[in-house]
Amino acid sequence: MEYKNNEIFLQDYGRYLAGYLGEKRVDYTLATFREENIFIIKDLRLNNFNQYFQIDTLLITPYNLVILEIKNYRGELSYDSLQKQFIQISDGKKTVYKDPIQQANTQRRNLAFWLQSFSMNLPIDTLVISSNPATAINNIQEDPQIYNQFIHSESVHFHLERIFKGYTERRINHSTQNKLYKLLLSHHQPYTPDLLDHYKISPDLLINGITCPKCTNSFMKRKEQKWRCPTCKTTSTTAHKQVILDYFLLFKPTITNKECRNLLDISSPRTAYLLLKNMKLESSGKNRYKKYHAPPIGTYPQDKSIPLPSNQIFL
Image (cartoon, rainbow, N blue to C red):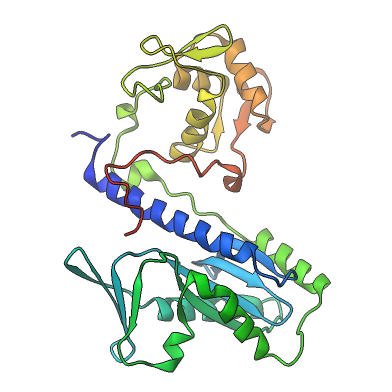
């Protein structure tokens, strides 16, 4: 089986990449919002009695909490408020998705229940945002409530101001906002799936070494404190970093000197030591038992994407 160009992998990757880029579009819009007293948490994942729920973006404001459910679809979208259906027509194909408004409402109930366990009761509003500016949104029944719940990213400012105007007074001060922000982050549990298990891939099929970013079938060699491609002569001083971070995501949250040497296809324990040390990874143990620990998932570089057969980032 050809894994590198596997259609399932590319489709799944394209879907996740589209979601990430859509959230970045909304992030940019939020960054220009005039209201300064807002704390923002991205991809918040919390536990309610062993049941996890995840929120794309959560705003902690002086008036309320706002859940943003972000969708990144292309083509023509239709919302049927009677059937509670979300329909996409793109390239002549009709696809029915889960109702995003109901998804956001479910997240609101989950969050309200979670807050109750800390004796907190705050109003929670929701917005479903289409991050693709070229998408047409049809409100089939012309339900006025839907116009205020399913919006384009360009109108986020208007709808946030509309929501805030519905509150006659501030519910929490800046200090309480900060405490809630820290509380939520302290209970955030990032999701790191076991991709090898999910796709039923044996670890033995993965190739060690550092692939040249230009010659995808060539492997770089370590020489004079740089990685060099013997084919196109491309050099890099940091090519190993992404490979080590990928190892943490694919295998386990720690790596030893020996495992690093096998991974990068190098023989020198000192070289492996210096490469790991320069990544400023936390470590535990000594000598042969020393382990280097993965950094927080939020610090991983996410803007370096692999090329897709199509330039279309919207689903």
